[in-house]
Image (tube, rainbow, N blue to C red; front, side, top):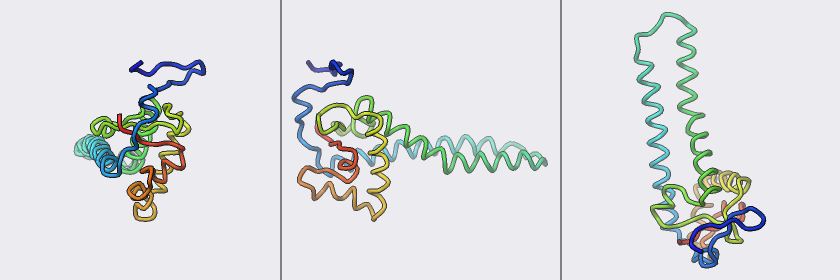
Length: 164
């Protein structure tokens, strides 16, 4: 069985070989995260460019239009990147276990049981990303010294990153 198959409980079970996969090392995980960061930054930048292009239309002397432009700009700069990143990581970790960076690096996120992460665990993993960044990225660097290469967000979400 090389593809995911539904177990009697309705969750996707992985191959036995994949569920016992070798833990991905820090450098591979870092490169995957860097690829994801470049991809998400590019998407957010394109969104900002489109809004900035719309703002270059001849200005209307109406204060309502100016206020709408300001609110739209703040949304695109602050809220849209957070929403995009959250959606990207939660959905892709839950439905396939791989983001674009993880696909390129040949790694996958699974639960400690070797199954795909449920949506709740993916959300918890995302919250763990924020916690891992707080003390100067120490939570991410923890994967370099941990014997199982588990970062803080892996421990929080009971997940692990394995080679395919």
